[in-house]
Image (cartoon, rainbow, N blue to C red; front, side, top):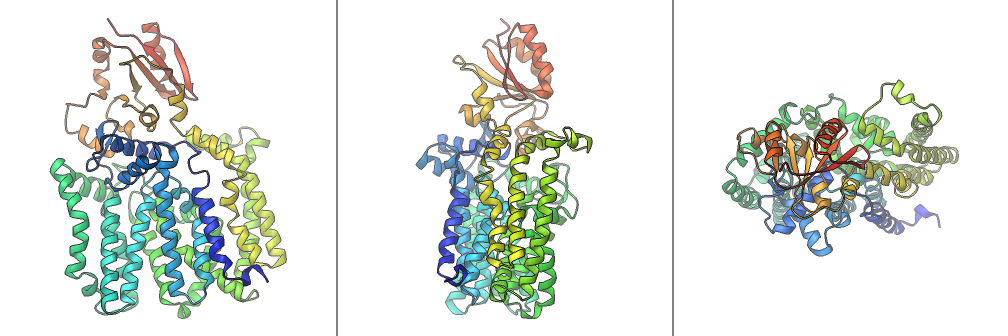
Amino acid sequence: MKFWSNLDILPFLAIVIVLIALFGRLGELPFRDPDEGRNAEVAREMHQSGAWLVPTYDGLTYLDKPAFFFKAVALSYSFLGESEMAARLPSALFASLLLVMLFAFCRREYPERSTAALAVIVTATSPLFLVLARHVIFDMTLAFFVSASILCAYLAESSTGKARTYWYLFGAAAAGFATLVKGPVGFIIPLLVITVFNLTERRRGWAGRGFSPLNILVFLAVVLPWFIGLSRQRPDFPYYGLVEESFHRFTTTNTFQRGGPFYYYGLVLLGGLFAWSILLPEAVARTWRNRSKLVPADRLFIVWSIVVVLFFSISKSKLPHYILTVSVALGALTARLFVAALQNRNGEAARLIYRGLLFLTFFSVALAAFLSLELFHPGAYARLGIRGSEFKRLTLLFIPSAGVLLSIAVMAALAFWQRDIRIAFATFLLLPVLLLTADFGGLLHYSEASSSRQIAHGIPSLPPNTDVVCFQCFPCGLPYYLTRNVTLVSKDGSELTSNYVTFTLKKTTDWPQTIIPLENWDHWLTSRDQPFYLVADRAEHNALVALAQEKKASIQEIAPGWWGAMIAPAN
């Protein structure tokens, strides 16, 4: 029996791929800075203190995001201990639940049984989804609740009677929990998607049913206890959360400095869904030509993708993970394409995939050649004007990734030559499999270069009451790996990468003890009666050298690009 003829094996295959992709070697990489190191430390402090309403980071109030995700990680610490694996487990679990939900939805909406399993496989092996499922970051948890809210609202309008009521209540609750994860965007995205979808479907009465008093009450019952409780403890939070963190994030780049061109998310889709994204341009054209044959679920996923991409393209603040839920919608639509190709290997869908394979072959070879430039022509990237610390760290992945791309090119050429949709599907999901196996060593080196772990390991054992002080730099995961607060010397506290901290420091001259104003640095040094260990990065290396010479202290390189010195008290 042919592999694809046995539909019962596809759910099993999906389960195996999900388990390997999301949970395989989950705790072996160190936390990457800034996000993972900072988020893991916020959760660690919550776990240690038991206080969940007001998160803290390095002992400072941290209200950049609500407490829900931090509490989930803190609970994981409670059961499994404080580790990389425990910190990443909530993201992986929410990713798994999202895939289960996608599977159930596709099973319900599509007559072809294979669509559900293929949708799960495509989504799970999309790099954007895969990376965020294995990171200590809010977005996968947010994606689960946002997707649940959208799908529940869709199912509500597809149902009648009590079932419709229950689906809407579930959707309202999911929107509330999404808001607890990351603020107003948690309900704005489901609201926009469902509104546009119902308008395009020309449904009548949906607004009254969706915004019924009971649904609103459920949403408020989830959100208000947290919002009111936090606002009572931190009266500045309503203004900061609604204006600074939400409105200004959308309308300006002055605060968050995360801008990008309007086509930014086109590039994100190309890389974040690779290699499936190779099929996207022609698949869009095919969908338009066959729009009269689309079923409601197809139209939902199309509206979902367009609305989310447009919304965040308009926003002045742009980051790749903002459009994470699009990988779910496009994963289902890509699965539909492969189902059509499997049903007719000579049909339009199959021919589209064959052309995609041909392009994938040449694209993978060309990209592999680019990644290998430095190997054959040292200094090539610098001559092309490609520089930067992050790019330098990424070069650690280049040679292994070039090998992965050449493997993909070989399989793509074979699938094209054989006109075999089964091999084609395996080719498109090959990237994450090889990244987690053949290229894992490269991922480890890259993560180490982006982490505070080696800095913490490089700091020698310190006497009691010895503070660790960072001079105008702050490795965000250092408090986690040292399991202690770290003092910062700074002009404005921006090194902590907390917008709330910089927001509060602007309003007062009474700074916390763990942040030393740069203008008070000399006074702090002369009044110090205990030794301290001073850490500096490459930019502040000369300042560290000057102080060490003055204090007759020796300097150690504690990690590449990082130095430290034990500084004796003035008296």
